Image (cartoon, rainbow, N blue to C red):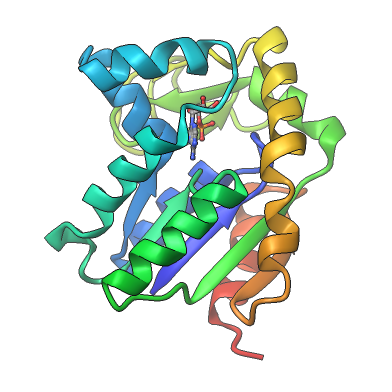
Length: 216
Ligand code: AMP
């Protein structure tokens, strides 16, 4: 299975992507996680990406496209992959198509997580993520059992630097301008599915599984 999940920041791509990967054995490739890793390791690429990320802007296409190609061709991706946060604009979608056809691969599902804009700021500003497994919690809606610790693996929970209200507003603006046009790009393709991403984590997960499995 080769899956793309896309939608606005805060729609639940990361949370749902981790679960799909765990349940199916395909790898979860989260572009934002790879970039944050590069930033924390202070690689040349990470240093370059940091300023864009802190400002809530997209990192240049050449950087992220190169990183994706290196990842989807790894042996770990042989069973399939779920892309979360890539592509994020039409140029990246076109580059993905070209690189997949070069490796004789195709996308089986492109799922759009459709979430109401009003909920996104609240979801993002209260979000807590596990440093170890990437699982997401929310301060009010789905708090961890023990403050600061992941229920699943005991890892440390943290708040992302770009989950501050001013940066969130900028990220939503960038989404509208650059990522929302992907709807036109993908919506006529047979692999495209749209799901309602408002609602609880389990409820949205059920809709996502159905969208992935349903061949109609
Ligand atoms: P995310 O974790 O998906 O919310 O991404 C966090 C940040 O990483 C974004 O705000 C961008 O600055 C950067 N980023 C993630 N994915 C991409 C992408 N496909 N293209 C460019 N920048 C990206």
